[in-house]
Amino acid sequence: MKVSIWRSLPHENAPLFRLLHILVAVLILAQIINSNFTRREALGGHSLETTITWMHIVSGFGLIVLGIVLLWWMFSQRGFNWYFAWAKADFRGIRQDLNTLAKLQLPEALPGGIAATIQGLGVVALLAVAVSGGLWFVVNTIQGPSSAFAHSILHWHKFLTTFIEVYFYAHGAMGLIHIFLDHYKRYSAE
Image (cartoon, rainbow, N blue to C red):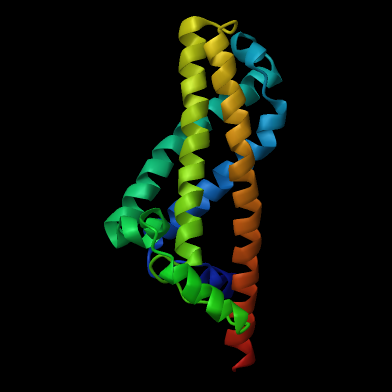
């Protein structure tokens, strides 16, 4: 069973990307959970909140690095246009995927398609949230917790977090549905 679930996970042909994908997903989930227990006032203390806040900060910086590696890998493998064709007003892949979905079929991954677009936007959302959090930490450290600029950046960090949370849950649900359908199709054919 363990082997069949592992085989059902996406990106079987790209083990580095698969591991990055899983690591980023686990860290994002941890960030979503522990963000409810972080306090900027706890940074100088010696409490459980301090530990959780520092874990959030350190793993946030880790997500910046992983997000950059993920984006670099995506661009090195398939290029900018694969994920961001819409930025050049090229919606052919999205239209093709919508036509396939209208036939009640799952579309294959294609340049500029829905899956590629969602993945590209997800990595951008990840980097926006992680970089804004890192920027808040740097400004808060330099200017102090009473800094209006640090407060403004923290506001933007929290606002941008909404996008990564929506992406995380929607992408995760779609991924699970895709894995389930693929698993069902694979084993119903036997």
